[in-house]
Image 1: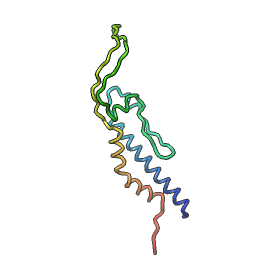
Image 2: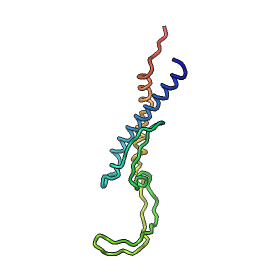
Image 3: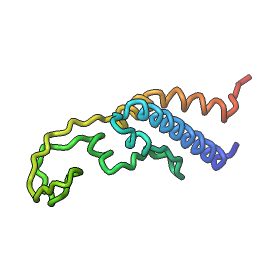
Image 4: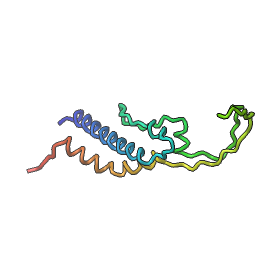
Length: 132
């Protein structure tokens, strides 16, 4: 096997291993994601890309749930409640939100098995050389 073929196969095995570990991480994150309405969980998706894979949670608050947020004040415009009462513009205090790290922890756990998966994939792709 020449060097170019070897490098191409090695790159292929590495990419497959990364994609396998990300899929496992996504499945773990789906089990760990906090569920109140289920919208955040349903917004999750794992996608293979050219140089690896990615996990996305598309709800606008996904990052805050994952990473947390410091306590802060928020300006609210006037709005009508469901009962028709008008609430005028005001400032409200938002308490600190602790990070849930459902993606980070899931990927960390999934990638702890990277070397085992990589070794297995290498053995499947390359024939073992024996010396006589």
